[in-house]
Amino acid sequence: MANVAVIGAQWGDEGKGKVVDWLASRADLVVRFQGGHNAGHTLVVGDETFKLSLLPSGLVRGKLGIIGNGVVVDPEALLAEIDKVAAQGLRVTPDTLRLAENATLILPLHAALDRAREAARGDRRIGTTGRGIGPAYEDKVARRAIRVCDLAEPETLSDKLGELLRHHNTLLAGFGAPTFDKAELLDRLLALAPRILPFAEPVWERLDEARRAGRRILFEGAQAVMLDVDHGTYPFVTSSNTVAATAAAGSGLGPSAVGFVLGIAKAYSTRVGAGPFPTELADATGQLLGDRGHEFGTVTGRRRRCGWFDAALVRQAVKVGGIHGLALTKLDVLDGLPELTIGTGYRIGADALPHLPAAPGAQARAVPIYESMEGWSASTRGARSWAELPAQAIKYVRRIEELTEAPVTLLSTSPERDDTILVRDPFEG
Ligand code: GDP
Ligand code: IMO
Ligand code: MG
Image 1 (cartoon, rainbow, N blue to C red):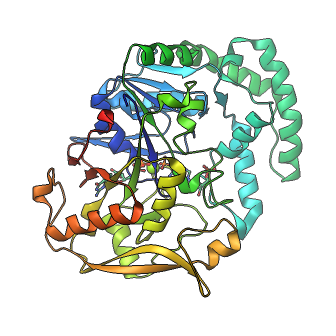
Image 2: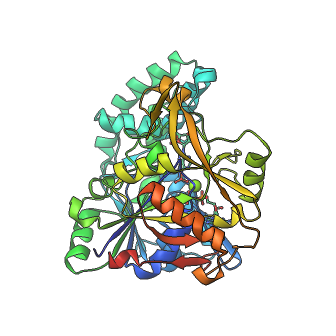
């Protein structure tokens, strides 16, 4: 298996950026295939910290980055991010980044609608990032989206904007939100076009050539299986499929090109937005995990909810995501906890369930079945080999492998790029 797809196995923020950056040294191209600038991927390289939302993490290693057709692209956010990393010394040019010409654009009206709807939902809000991700995917499926290639055709753009605004201004007005003026929006997009279009191309052709030449492709997932629009805790999910199968459709390759699927999981659990979280800890231990793990949303700045490792949930992600191996991150955050708890399944009344049910009411009522293990007192932070890990930490990892039915392929012990233990090279299959 020449290629690798990295996906989140929980509710996001598992450390995909760190792992993709680390693996990118072994890859030739890094491809984003879904999501948008709702993602926040943090890479720590020496003294420099990169927080990337749209740019593929492989760019930091000097690898060619590709934004696939499955990504929803806010052109202003993309240009702002290119400028931000330039200030950190990372130059992104059309030689280093390619953008699918058939990717859907996120426009300012999408973010406005996202926020207006969230405000109207009140207590029932999803806790979206407010960046217009959901409304942009809705327009794509409704066949009225503006795509990257439309920026090259002012007349097409003008016609499509007319149709789009008829729909969106009606909705925005209904929510009591300000509406958008077509001429203003058209001017804004036409002004962006000369900076965006040099990145645009049919990326599927480049990927096909790369695949046939035996070059290694690393697919970088955003969000995670439990935020997948089909397989996650619906409706508290994002608006794309986050499973590895999407890597093919979201970049323009066949399913056999995806290769090894590496699921990233934290050694505990976190969640940013609203929605079910069976192993959540509302106590001092939850607080401790959040403090130690610096659990604040990269995009939202909101404190992440924290809880124990939910092996039943990750096992479910392994199955629906086609995960071949896990990268277990943030093991160091558990250092010094006297006892560790793992969720192994759920109970609803008298019924024991191996996996989280689909119905929202049942998800809310599901109570975890727990088992406990002794913790370890020595530090694992910065460990770069198994030999540096305390015996209890190894036991914890082994138990996670058994319960999730997936081997641990990689371990991460700090935010820093090289504090990583490779068990098996995913590019070797
Ligand atoms: P992503 O969205 O999956 O890329 O993850 P984020 O970057 O949003 O969040 C993960 C956070 O954990 C970042 O701040 C990383 O720097 C940090 N991180 C990644 N791996 C480790 C690790 O093994 N230990 C610790 N302590 N932090 C880590
Ligand atoms: P990375 O790639 C964590 C969550 C939001 C909200 C839900 C829907 O950094 O792991 P959206 O704006 O996508 O419509 O919000 O999904 N969410 C994430 N949570 N990490 C992310 O990305 C997320 N992207 C979206 O908090 O609950
Ligand atoms: Mg993140």
